[in-house]
Each structure stands twice: as C-alpha cells, then as structure tokens.
Image 1 (cartoon, helix red, strand yellow):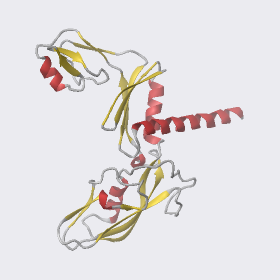
Image 2 (spheres, rainbow, N blue to C red):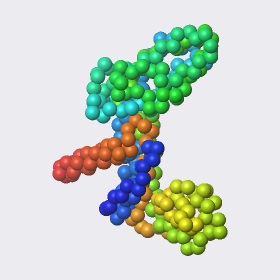
Image 3 (cartoon, rainbow, N blue to C red):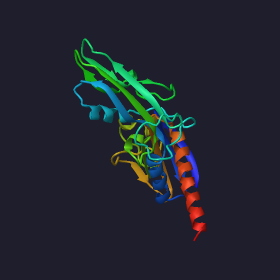
Image 4 (cartoon, rainbow, N blue to C red):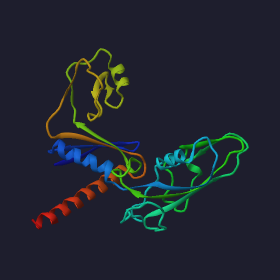
Length: 256
C-alpha cells in the first residue's frame, strides 16, 4: 500500500491510496465517520425558554453545533452516559443566558459560554433560535465525548472515496479557457493549451477530447472535517480505533 497527499483546502484532505482494495477503503471510511470521538452537547437543563422553538427543538439544534475537541484532556465515558456526572475527564459545561430582549435578536453559538476554552463552537455565527421583544432564554448544557455510531452529532465530518481518475487530454478543445473556467480545480491553461492541474478531481460530465480511465487498487479518499478535529487527527483516531479492534479480535482468536 502506498499513500500520497494530493492536497488540502478548507478542511478537506485528499489522499491517494494505491495497492489496496475497496473493502479496506470503505472500512476506513466507516471508522472515520463512526468511530472517531468528538465533543457534542448531550444534555440541556432549561431555566427559561419562551422562544418560538420549544425545549426539545432548541436542545436538538444545540447538539448539532460542532465543538472543538480536546482528546488529550477528555475521554469517552466508560459506562452508559444518560445525564451529567460532573466528571471533568468526560464532560464540560456550557451556559447561555439571554435576558428579555428589547428587539428581535438571533441567539447564536457564540453566545454559549464554555467552562473550558478548548471546547467552544467551531462556527460562532451558527443560529440557535430567534427571540422577539420580551422573550428570553437561559440554560445549562453539558457536552461530552461520543462517536458517530451512537449519534450523527458526534460524526467528525464527511468522508467519501472514488477511483483515482487518470485524465488524458487527447485533443485540445477549441475553447480551453472556458473549460478551465468551468473546472478550475481540474484544469488550467498554459501557453494557450489546456493542461491537467489536479487529477484527483473529476469532471461531472464527458468533455470532448478528455479521456478518463481508472485502475483497480488506485483510489482517492476525501476527508472533510466539520471542524471538531483536523482531517489528519480524524485519520489517526480512525486507524487507532481500527487497530484496537483488530487487537481485541486477535486476543479472542487465541481462546479458540
């Protein structure tokens, strides 16, 4: 197996993996979205809420706010977690208090106050709810580590793969600038001729003079982080979880 970093932009990492098979790539994909621990709000105690959204809807929206995750400080709960335990190794408290507003106000993720500066909303401008004159909102939220197979709110990002596209320009198009403008991540124009800029990107339709072929065992894995962890950390955590399960299987096999 060979690994090559093709590029990274806006939290999306592209890796070329060769001498492997779809079964392994798909297993890695599933571990990335389902077995990588991240922090998310899982319990909310409302003090007051007279917004247009009832408690359950506000709590649901809070759970979907990506939080920066510190895996060196926090660990997954060893037992089933159903409510706050005050265990600083597992959970962190975030509070929000918006007194009665005098005009229409959008309550945003940045209004959350975390007791740990390492665990804060990734996207501060994410809206939680709207308050109109005379309405207020106050609650105590508890975030903890979890994994995507428990609930999608703990999933760290989008992950997908496809065959690595071998792109050949067999005939120069009449309008290379237009083709390059339509696919800026794939083509560029040099000396008046269309050239391949980044082969791991694929055109979404057939283009005259452009040939795309694939080879078995040659794949591109795309890892796009939601922001809780970097794409590199996601991969490291997924591989660690995969290795741990294989070790557990090896120990069980010895008892046969």
